[in-house]
Structure formats: C-alpha cells, structure tokens
Image (cartoon, rainbow, N blue to C red):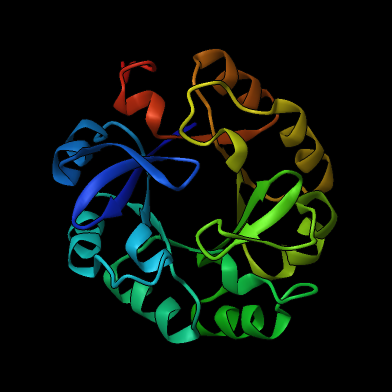
Length: 224
C-alpha cells in the first residue's frame, strides 16, 4: 500500500531534502483532495518536531476529512492524548522513544497506558546506520535492526525512514528494509527516497507499506 505524506510547516504542506532544505510547498487541503483515493494519509507536523509551535488546527481539519497517522514532536504523554483528541487514527512516536543509551521504556509504557498499543507507531529514522532524533539533528548509537524487537510491546507497527535518501529522488535502500523485515513481524511502513513503482512493489513483496512524498509532489510517481 502507498501512504501519501503531508508534512506541515507554517500551515503549508512542504517537502524537505533530508529534513532540512525546503524543496517545495503546497496547499495541504489541495493535497488531501488529491489523496482521497488512499485509505490513510501520513501527516507529520514539522514545526512541532523542531520545537517551533504546532499546526494543531490544521491537523484536526485533516483528520476530520481523512484517516490520518500523525507524528512530529510527540514527546509527552499529554501530547499523545492531544493527538488522539485531534482525531489521529495512529500516533507516531520518534525522539521520545529513546534515551541517551537505549529505549525509553518508561515513556512508551505510559503512552501505551494512555491510548492503547493499537494507536501507537514508533519511528525508526536512520542516518548512516544509526537512529536519529530531534528532527533528525541528533544521532544515537542505536541501530534500528538491533532494537526493533524490543519495541514491539509498545506499538502496533513501525515507521522506518532511510533519512540519507529522504527527498533526494534517488531511490531508497531496499537492503536496509530487508534487514528490518527480518527483525520483526509487526507492520512496517517504509519511507525515505522511494521514487518508483518498482520500489513500491519490492517493498510490497516484503509486506511493507510505502510512505511517499517528494515523488508524488513532483509528479515522478503518478497518483493514477
């Protein structure tokens, strides 16, 4: 399954290269209309992720119109509850899932108690082989393939982003996704540089969904 992405910044739908340089922007409501044929939409609040406020009003509007997975800046149990109230069908936890030297099991257990395991996804954003946090600006010493099984009790699936290719339109790293698939039986949504239907099909053969942004926004991957 393809999961189209709407990344929010300053009330706009944007696409960034490796989470830093803005490559383009669009009207999020228009993108939602374009994505009406898909069963779920992937919404990331980049302002919240980077600690620059949030787009809660817009997130609530999107969630009322279409089923949405929502992430970005989910660092407290209160925020987990807020996103549930905004209408998120699933809530993506990234930075807060990890501590300096490992998994933040105390926070994840509290989030699970607050909204239930079914609503939670954990993001394993990886650059140069290590999980990155804080808007992809800080590297941990952890490898996604080493910790993914430990995270299974706290979520219903994973969002795994190959950051090194994010937004670059150069293809993704299927070899890395195969490692992750071998490490867990839970659902995985792959992201980061996915550019062609061949890659989408290869991921589907691994029983993975494909979160796609830049390739759709630029027309490289046609919605039809």
